[in-house]
Amino acid sequence: MYPNFGLKPEDEKALIDNVSVVFHAGATIRFDEPLPVAMRINFEGTRSILNLCQRMKNVEAFVYVSTAFAHTDKRMLMETVYPPPKTVEEIYKFIEYNGGDKNETEKFISPRPNTYTFTKALSEAYIGKNHGKVPTVIVRPSVVTPIKDGHAKGWLDNWFGMTPILYNAAKGWNRVVRADPDSYVEYIPVDYVANLSVIAAARAKDSRGVKVFNSISSAENPMTWRETYKYFLDEAVKTGKNDLPSPFVFFTESWAVVNAWSILCQIAPAHAADWWLKMTGREPRYAKLIHNVVAIRNGVDYFTSGVWPMNSDRARDLISSLSEEDQEKFPCDPSHIQWPEYMRDYCRGTFRYLKSKV
Image (tube, rainbow, N blue to C red; front, side, top):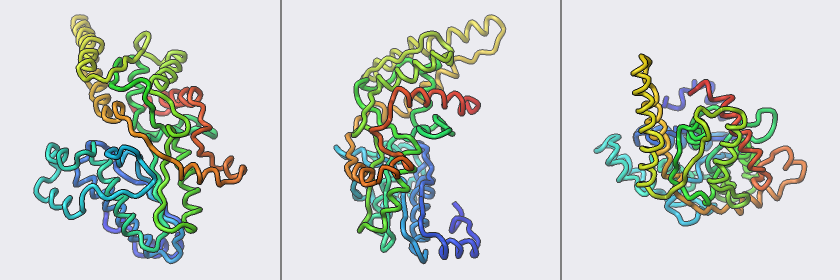
């Protein structure tokens, strides 16, 4: 990250003189990001943005987009600012002695699952303590998914979140997931997050202290893992996007069963197929593919296997306070999502917009 974001003095002055509303959603969202890198981007970037806001002459709102998974150590995620997971001094002392050592970092940030959620929690606490006179809002979306409304339904531009495991299951490459099939999935469309952020910014000047809004769906309109995969896979089969016949997903909460199913239904058949390719003079490719599929699935296992009740009363009250006209202009009410239709568009968007990025 460049000092002062690489701004020229004249550009910085223009921002200070003319900008009144700031949305900060930039972050590295890699779960395996080394702690020094995550701190530099997610925490120091946020600290610098807040410092810039404090110098703005007419600032009316600073909106920080965090994540609903920053506090998975809580039994219930409330719409409040929580204490930091560690002090900034403790973190930089750790980095000084351990750098980005993966094993030591995992122990240091526990019970947080990764450096992304850890630095998001730290940034929230820093903002809560240091926002000063800047009207400040924290928006915590859950798993951000494709656009729901408008002319670009299903649009998305990256493979982060749960999209890869849904895609791999739809292709028939992944057959097992560690999850309770009847537990709730926590998805929220990206346009809903954007609209809630705009509404929260408009109301920020009228509130005292930092307001937190959880942008989630499970509290208002829950969908289960079983339903999620059914809707996505049904659309993939209907449109002929599956590579292997009859794609399905077996749900289990046991790691032993996950490993057994992976070997029997994915890894062993992949090696057998590669053996046949070699015997017929062709280049083997399936074992590498399936090992990548398994690695991707295991990388999000913490989030598929966990359950975190979340409260969204304040977000609900904010949405309800809008006029009917504004609710139509800025849709963000999760109770209006029709999940079968939305997951159909999610599937179509994944294959339309991301297939070239595989």
